[in-house]
Image 1: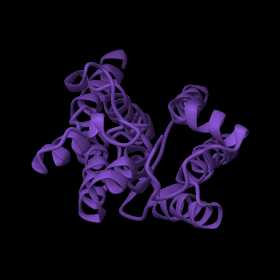
Image 2: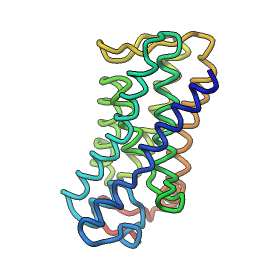
Image 3: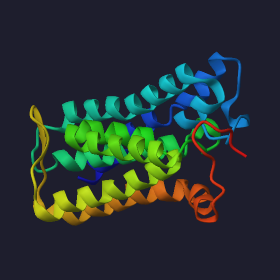
Image 4: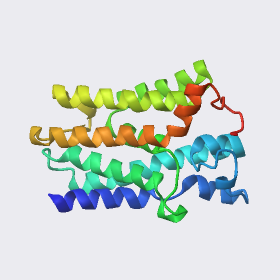
Length: 221
């Protein structure tokens, strides 16, 4: 069982570490790390390189979570007792790879789009709720970071609702399931996933508190 966890983490990490934003920027002859906020995520790609680059980065960051999740689901997903454990460890690996890519000297993005890929694979309704949180709050407030931070908190709340209440969730053709013995472990992973997003947004949170956060589509300071 320990080996299963390690393998899922590593598969997720390998795919997650692909620096999508950096690769897209190189297609434009640019280095995204030297532009805007210096972040290699889709928001900085959108602000610094335009809609097409932003869309490509966003799609790539989602796929680098979905693809390893599909692989581990195919290989390890038959056992209902460990199915969601496989999903969560693979998803955590993908987010860690995105945030701390060895190809970028263990730097990277903030993990929101890659986390969205994990959520999309996990449950379509949950993905819709997360999308509304990010886009809705960003449009209302003008701050993409505030939408992302809110989504990270909502992610944890929904996970606790599912896991503590033993609720059913997942896609109809692939319902997520787990043995109750893993509930505490799954909750810890959920806290790590949510906590990573908040930690990676530390500078944004400080700027929001002081009222000098960058508005949507404006260049980072």
